[in-house]
Image (cartoon, rainbow, N blue to C red; front, side):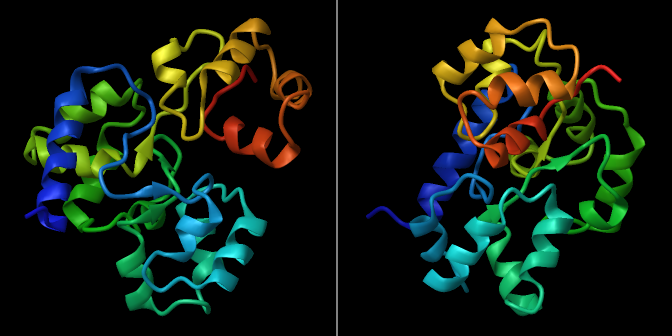
Length: 212
């Protein structure tokens, strides 16, 4: 008999096996991306309703976990948000998130908050895996990784790195590469804005870094 526990365990094992792959956005183990998950799937999650799912989609994209949490406060109780976040989440920027934002990560305690902060700036997720692996087992590293990302340079990022961005497909990877080198956020907004709306441009840009 297939149970939720066995499915979750299998997913964790797949995530652990993928740790050697190049990636800049953590792969989902249990948590889905709140900025790209379809409305119907959001509505089916714990504590959510069709009306709240519609309101959430209209408010996207959320810049990070703090903005996501602020949106849900007053709509869901603390207990409901605690139950939801292992299933629905907005990736946090490992190099820029505040201590308070990191504390929103499910299962996070003061010690691991310190470890997250200690190793900044992270060059890539391989550094995160190596350093967090000093304190917790690989399956826990994979669980934590699903909540985070390291901003990538769209000019030099590999296809594999770009494909870790939630909702990214081969066509958009081609568009990212077509306009290289990327010299500014304004250029990105202009060129990628030819293919997707402003909200989607902003969502994609949140995973990237541009020259100052």
